[in-house]
Amino acid sequence: MQNAHILLPDALVVLGFVIASRVGDFCSEATNRRLTYLIALVSSTAAGVWFAIQSSDPHHYYFFSRMIVIDPFASVMKATVSLGFAVSLVYSRRYLEDRDLFRDHVFLLGMFSLLGQLVMISGNHFLMLYLGLELMSLSLYAMVAVRRDVAQSSEAAMKYYVLGALATGFLLYGISMLYGATGSLELNEVLKAVASGHIDEFVLLFGVVFIVAGVAFKMGVVPFHMWVPDVYQGAPTAMTLFVGGGPKVAAFAWGLRFLVMGLLPLAVGWQEMLVILAALSMIVGNITGIVQRNVKRMLAYSTISNMGFVLLGLLSGVVDGNAGSAASAYGSAMFYSIIYLVTTLGSFGVLMLLARRNFEADTLDDFKGLNQRSPVSAFVMMVMMFSLAGIPPTVGFYAKLAVLEATMNAGLTWLAVLAVVTSLFGAFYYLRIVKLMYFDDPQDTSPISAGAGNRTLLALNGVAVLVLGIVPGPLMTVCLQAITHTLPL
Image 1: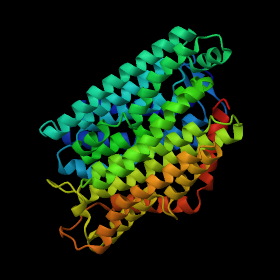
Image 2 (image 1 turned 30 degrees about the vertical axis):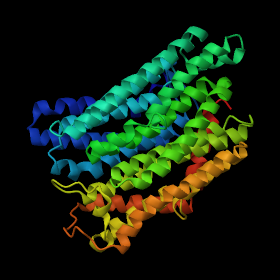
Image 3 (image 1 turned 90 degrees about the horizontal axis):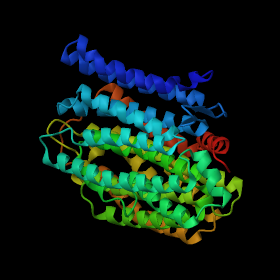
Image 4 (image 1 turned 60 degrees about the vertical axis):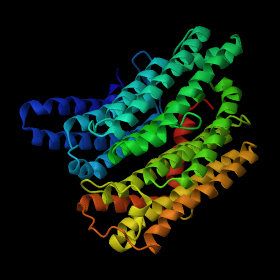
């Protein structure tokens, strides 16, 4: 317990949740809403900055009978999801106020989901990884269904819940098989037991299949993607951002804990599964997105294809056994997941900026002539679309290049070629939005109203995507150092 101060940023999120849940006992409902929002914003921002400062510490700290680990990888990823949650709150405020959803329970569910993500990222024990998953998922199910009077939201929440329960069953079954084979649930002990070679490999691989299925569902990759488009389209746009932002980064970190830190000796088995999942995700995500007219549904298929790229980096680190190549591959996947969050925040930030009371700006026609109505919003959206398409000088280009380089170094040339070809299909629907914004006449000429803080943050988001594309070195260095100091390479 002499290192208990390492847990203070996590404790800050918990403390913020506890205070926010009780503040309503001492003030009016309107004041309670504002205070809950501010507590959620301040606690997540402060925790994110604290995590970022803490990430420079290369040591590993274990707590609660080694069920929780704080290492550089955990600190960087926690900083990412915490700050991403804070930005999501700022972007969504006006949207929630216009729909009478600016309520304390929405922010409490969001904070509980953030807490689950933090547990997922720091889990060093199968049960703790499962607990973090459930803390996050149960909160997100409720957030998707927050508009109880809208049938589409309720339907999306039910699909998410039922399929999520099925994926959880797969995960628990895989964990039970690994526990029966290795006699432990701690990642380090499981790694040692599997590496010993004294366990029936058939039983281990059978358990790995179910764990990969659970990881694939939470990342939303094919063929476990069926919930993603419906949830993205059916949920309120603010809730879509809460589902499609930080949780995807946490799911990547969660999957890396499971597969690399616990099951690395079985890499040959799960790598072959990830190859199939990555290839299918890039094909389905990029091609199916072309025919979508709803922008949120289009971004859902974009998420599927982007998660395919993340899997490319994850599977490329186990091919040749070289520690340097492995660190580069895992670092590129980590870098890509962070960049995915930054671009997702900007894209949905523009969507909520264009929306207004009783109107959702979620179709392609809503983006026609946007440059004439709001040049700054159009520019930010163009930068986000260029980044998602992998066009320089945006950071998306460098992120894709880093992953493709890792894939080529792993000898998976055909998979790298497939990624490039499918990305060309994906570029079509990204650039289509740019064409509509700059070369079509607007169908909606109503003024775009937003606070100065919202506009400023959105502009900074766009600048960040450009600056990180021009100078990606510092962030990539942070990712590589976090991987090198954390994983058993």
